Amino acid sequence: MKRIGVLVIFAILLISFLEAEPVKIVFWHNMSNPVDRKSIEESVQIFNERNPNIQVEIILVPGSETEATKLMTAIAGGTGPDVYYLDRFTVAQRAYYQQLEPLGKYLEQIGIDIESLKKQYVDFAIEECIWNETLYALPWDTDARVLYYNKKHFKEAGLDPEKPPKTIEELDEYADKLTKKAGNRYLRIGFVPWVGQGWPYTWGWAFDGEFYDPENQKLIFAEDENIIKSLEWQKTYADKYGIKELEAFFSAFGMSFTGANVGSAAPIDPFLQGQLSMRIDGNWLLAQIRELAPKDFEYGIAPIPYPEELGQSTTWAGGWSLVIPKGAKHPKEAAEFIHYMATEGQIKYAVDTAHLPTIKEAIPEFVENYPEQKLFADLLTVAKSRPPLPVGALLWDELVDARNYVLYGEKDAATALKDAQDKVQSELDKMLGK
Image 1 (cartoon, rainbow, N blue to C red):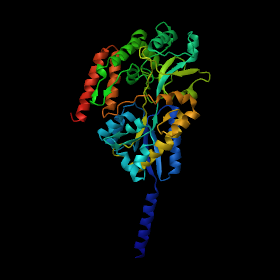
Image 2 (cartoon, rainbow, N blue to C red):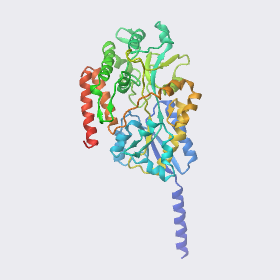
Image 3 (spheres, rainbow, N blue to C red):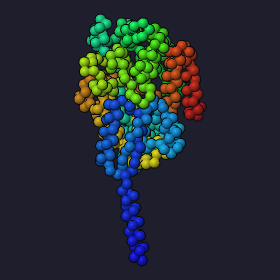
Image 4 (cartoon, one colour):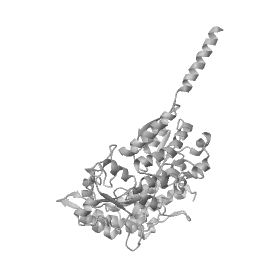
């Protein structure tokens, strides 16, 4: 009898010990630049210190906005993360394919008032997190895009550094004046439309085009003359600078010809190194300039140039989100971590990295502390956002492919866009049951 009592006590102690073991949450993200990465690491450390029962492990998984192959492979093998950093405009698509857990369900389990929480975020950001009336994500950051330019280069080229180009026509003129070449090799390039944040959406909207008709649930970009013009204009840069020469120039910085990171190492930014005079980019570049640019770096920012006949500029806003992939081992604890990161964590991230927060009440104070962000915050009131479609990632990829076909001279703009639209609309119709 005494022996049984000892065994019972031992069992209770063993259970208590096992229960005391912290739950391990695996968090995948792809923010490879050192400023963003450091801020995320610090927030995770704070969370771990406050929550000894939950310990978050960070794994950096480089990838593009729509890259999910690694995630899908890991989920299929039972080795997927508990929390994943997902470009927000793809939430609907991942949810449609049942690749995400319903986050709202787990937030409710830890006592979060979902309706009250949703009201804390800017409207378009939280709307991108919902599919079929179910909350699958919480917003992380948001952003806006502008033209960055090197003031020293402007002075060297005889341009007024306080008068950046307003129109596409001025942009073309300035780009030529700023470009320097020795033989077949570029020493400096004035501007390349598709580098940085010069995506198809950027220039399509800058040329006053539209991509989607929500009333009729139809993609319309292939018939939009302004979208076609935006691609034809980009092709003029590939023609005059040479696509192979541009590939060689950017590869020296560890980038693809679009300026995208190739490989896991952080690329060397040619704009920050003074070898690219102008680029389209987001407000997060401010922190990188502060941390990584030479101390005597002189730069300016301005709204994205537009065709002269339009008379006004535009921009677009996007951002990332935090989700629980399907099959996560600890969804309840993952939801607790996501709630922290998407509230307190994102405010710290905004301060550290110059990314605009999506929590409405945080924006005024953020701009007050960082007045250089005022232009970006002001642009949020007129910014466009990508349609939250279950084909969002596919649409993005097809638009990028269409652009590349045009740049390499493999298709004309109208054909490339038509092919892309037909493919994506077919998938969308299937999803909508048409």
